[in-house]
Length: 313
Image 1 (cartoon, rainbow, N blue to C red):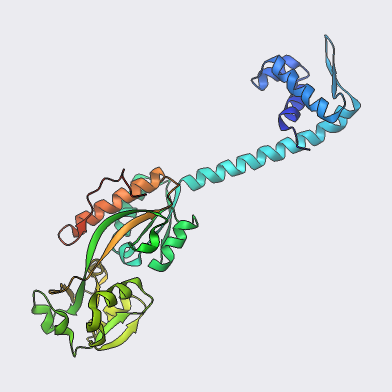
Image 2: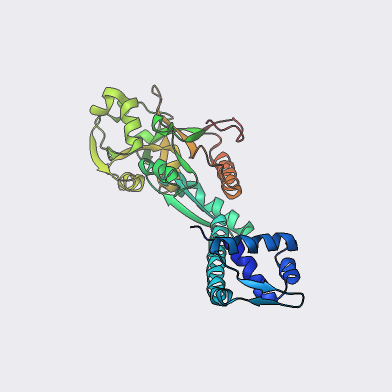
């Protein structure tokens, strides 16, 4: 048997106000609607809860026994409702999103600093995680959107490409290859190199694009992230191939040299759940991220020009 909360609310209001008229006004109901709710709960219980005369309203014995329990139930329901609503309001002010570490380290500090200055009530949960975990964070709802490398594995999500970014060779300024405007893969033969571990999406893209040449290059070091690879370059131990945007994290004595004779690049896009529209906070944050990318890399990245209102999916 279901609990008739509207009937309980009507009963408690009549008992508290001692008047059908005042109870109806408090609940913003007509007296007829209030009487209907009371009759319905009395029918469900099979007994009368109160008696009504021209002068007063009196509780029956059953009504007197029910009143404190009804008040308790309604208060618990109200407290639960208020708690959920307050939590929803806090959640609405807190944006959770996932982002490639290379992009997060490059532009997010400036973007989020500006947003916090204008919207101090906003909070952010930033998942700067590997590309292999970004899609799952979006699918599970832990992240409202993700900024990731575009791949066929994202077909179940809404996807909007942002830009195409090339991979470049990171060398020290005093290295002979730093003086060249462009380098070929053959320039790397016999040179100690550092690369990211095999499960990295960047590594997988490069392995496919480089073909047989990847087996001819001397990969002396395999590391977990771009920071370590650049430290090896800074120490003079190796050279490395990384996305161009990584230059913002590089030591000052490192330069990025583009490749010739081969196309090494990746497409970065935004993923979100198909059936869930982005919140206002998410839309605003993404617009700021795109503007910052354009400001920093407009000469080096190929940006998608499709409007945001037409995401694929």
